[in-house]
Length: 224
Ligand code: C5P
Image (cartoon, rainbow, N blue to C red):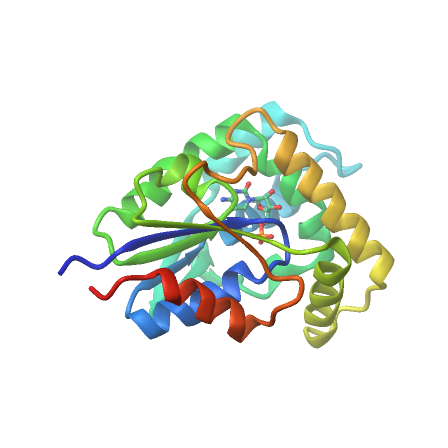
C-alpha cells in the first residue's frame, strides 16, 4: 500500500515538529520541518543581506538570497537542513532568528521560492510535513491534515523550557511576546496565512502532553 502524506499545521510551540518527528519514526515516514526552511533563509539573510543598521532592504534581499544554497540530508528519517554545506540546526533556533523569521516568511518571493521545494520533497509520498500552510497551500491533497493549537501561556512555558535547555537565556515575557507577534504576522499575511484547512482535524493540546497528542493523531491514521 502507498504510504500516506500527512500535513501538520498550527500555532507556534504547539509541539508540531517534535510530535511529527516521533510519528514519522513510528510509521516509517520522512519528516520535514518546514519552519526550518524559513528559519534557514532568515539566518542567512541576517548574516548577509541586511543594511548596517539591521533594517531590511527587500530589493537587496532577493538578489542576496540567490547566493543561498539550502540542502537537506536525511539523518534517520529526518531531513536536516544544511546551509552552504554547514549544519545549521542549532543556529536557526536563536531568539534573533525567531524575531525576524515571520517578516521574512511573509515575503511573496520567499514563499514562492519554497513552494516548489516543499512540493517536490513530498512528491513520492510517505512524508509528514509540519508548518503553517501545509494543509491549505503546499499539500492541499494530503491524506491527513491536523491543526494544532494550545493556550498562549502553555505554549510560552513549553518554548521557554526548550530555549533554556538549549542554553539560551530568555525570560517568559519576551518568549510570550515573540509567540504572539509571530502568530499575528503569520495569520494576517496576504499569502498563505496560518489558518486551519477546512478538512483538517483540530487538536487543542493545552491539557494533554506530547505522548497523548501523538496517540490521538495516530488513532486517525488507517493501517497502510
Ligand atoms: O515552525 P517554526 O516556529 O519554526 O516556524 C518559524 C516561522 O516560519 C513561523 O513563525 C512562520 O513565520 C514561518 N513558517 C511559515 N510557513 C510554514 C512554516 C513556518 O510561514 N509552513
